[in-house]
Length: 115
Length: 113
Image 1 (cartoon, rainbow over the protein chains, first blue to last red):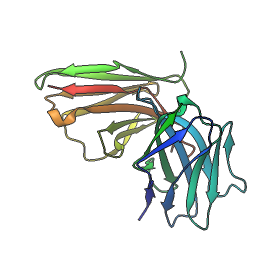
Image 2 (cartoon, each protein chain N blue to C red):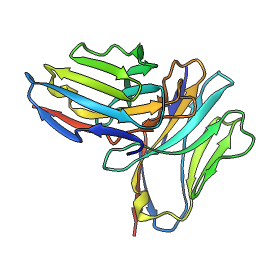
Image 3 (cartoon, rainbow over the protein chains, first blue to last red):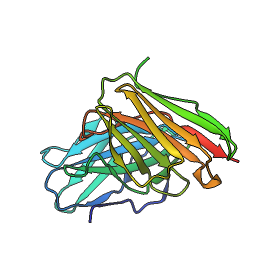
């Protein structure tokens, strides 16, 4: 079965510290894409970072990096030097080639940055 | 204007009302989606349109009726809703298949009274 698991319902992190949000996935499809989205309280779902299953290097986008460990089927999001504006829900999602347009979503992690 | 725009941002409607949610994308994408996000539940895909044809309908009640007149516009027509339909409704767009992800709008927060 194809599934995304986010085991941290909520996290508190001190401002300026790095934070790692966990995501594990399950699929037997060799071709897939992994995504992280941020959802502030305003509701908009904001794309952060993408990792393809055949990508040799871990994806990075500014302060965001994706720690992709294919053998462990994990795709953790790392946010360096956290800021108050990083407080939000974070969702991990997966797209497989034959999923007919659907993204498979995790339950999300609520991140709160403390000043 | 760029990205994906949803209107209205907030909507309160009675169970006997008829209303419509609107979504517009300016990204040149050819697939558009409606998602429902209820409190403490994963995102639920409701409808998918690719090249203006509906390609997915995930067992959504008939009181929700989508319309995609062209590749830039998507509507969700609502009638005789129930209180449990109160949720955040998110529109998204992608290049066909969405293999490299979606771009979402800001959502419409719907309350059914």
